[in-house]
Length: 106
Image 1 (tube, rainbow, N blue to C red):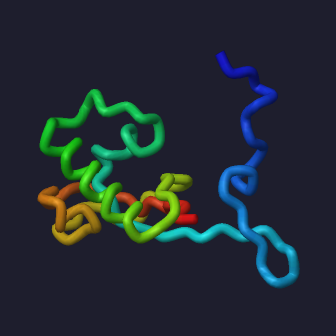
Image 2 (image 1 turned 90 degrees about the vertical axis):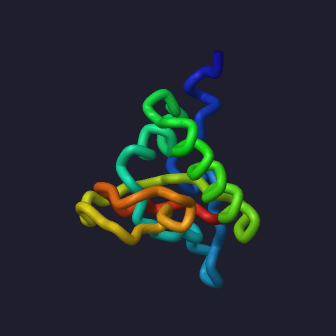
């Protein structure tokens, strides 16, 4: 079991970069993601997803990891609602209630 002392303090401990002035920054991207994927993205809990949903999430993750050094969900905003066109639509996910998810992309 991992003790609490080994967990990073704040996001800057995970994948921080610095700008020209030495201030810590993070490269992020905002994507509109259907809400049924939130537990899988934030908690690693795939129990509520179908096999097709898991395949779509894996395909999206692999596509972003091919372009970026990492792909971790770090925040959410409940600002979208029901969307036909969202960022998982190219992977076969139909219209859904969505939220904007912020990802650390390294």
